[in-house]
Length: 347
Image (cartoon, rainbow, N blue to C red; front, side):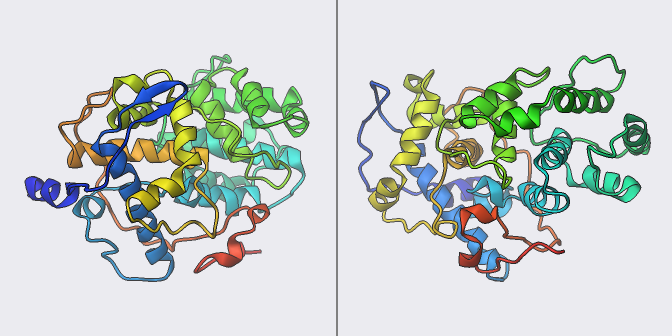
């Protein structure tokens, strides 16, 4: 069965993959680089088909049918959609409150944790915040065997004097709010400066600070350009290695920018018609995520091409989610009226 999946999925490319020069370094793309674009086009078509109400299966690609992959556009994934619709743009739009809600949500990055907090105390606010109110809710959920944190990426606990991870994260939010971080971020000159401010806090490494900067930038109060800079994560580095070999080591951010800048050229080169998100091109954050996803896809489609981690299996199989798919993005992007089922968030 697995061999059949590989045979059907790989296919041979008849389109020439020429060498490219990035950051002054000559790179020779592998077959996985073509797969990067084919994967993006096929995965986006699945998303569009679902928005239009098409019935499963949405693709003939057996790998995409069998395993779980995130959307091409980071903001389209379910957790990001919940963050945008129900956390950032619902409730008090004072920037300090939006910042507080966003950080509180993202430190756990799990919709069920947010919903439990809201059910217990109402939508959390900084103006009404008390450690003694939120801690028992989270502690009781933990004692009941509930997961508080998403498995999407590890959010390490800062060492701020508490015995439990979630308590230290609450103390971290207090530290951020009490040091006027919302106001300083609002005055930042760009996304990189937001990243640098977040990076200065305990437990924030480069990748986590970048992810939080992107999330905060969904808010109406910030208008920074997502194309300003990118921080490659471990999965993206694996995908880039599979696309370009060891010669790509150390210039991963430059490669992500090259890919974002030349996306139309490569889709055209392969005869692909990529359905954008309401006319919005893939941004640096999206191309970074796609490298992570093609790393996983290539474990089955191109098992002979090695990455950095040496992983050979895809952990998550696809399971259809019964919850309706939403498609509502920051209004400042101007794309909601261009999507098949774009709808306003509930009042």
